[in-house]
Image (cartoon, rainbow, N blue to C red; front, side, top):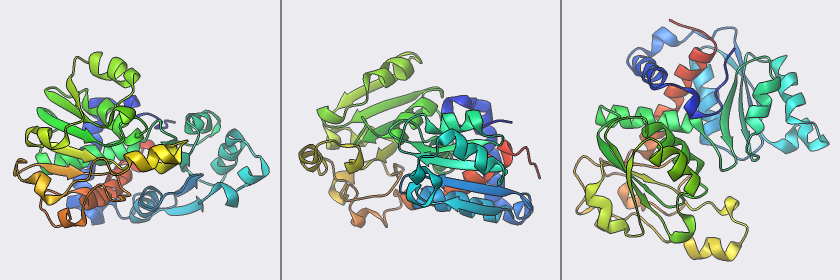
Length: 305
């Protein structure tokens, strides 16, 4: 039995295999419509989510399986003080696989240590979000045809953004990838990510506050929102939330084949005027998220077509 808590647990070969299966699902959806017949997914979400929870549930239904759901801590026995370990043991009696989101870093790892079925980390605090990373990798691959030899810019909240940390971790393993880190000083990428991932893997990177100045270099622009829920001080959030806003004029010197990604939800960091630009891929990401989760559920359940 295998769980997925951190994107680093997957080798590049396994990531490439997941992407290959996802691409086949896109081309041949009917072939996969009953592969999870008789299987149940439990979604256990102790933090608000629209896309991730519904993406997992939609993925399981499209594989012919069923879903049981804990949509908030208040609607579960966690409200009575039940531990994550006990909840995981309990859900293992009901489901074949668990997708868990929790505000506390490490909670899905604890769940995986006590569950008797695979656990997928659907986001734990500011730490990890491996299925969003798989979503991003599939999007980049489908849009660019490769995962190596490109320049990827991350803009916004690089300090608390778990999607940023996970994607940097994954992309650092592909050759020829350069990173441009665009953020205010207060939201810079943590030093441990630079030390343990970028420098350790010999990746070329630069940090800047100059958003418009670096856009012409980029093959991928990964926008993020400044996350109100990660701030202790409302004043700091209000001061930083509108620092970088992507508008059509900022794309005047961008590459024609630039691709713009965003893990969503968007607040105002990407103007709606960008939505119809062919370079905008953030709603395609939502679709790809469902597909890659279908591929992952199959892998962790040991199912093939």
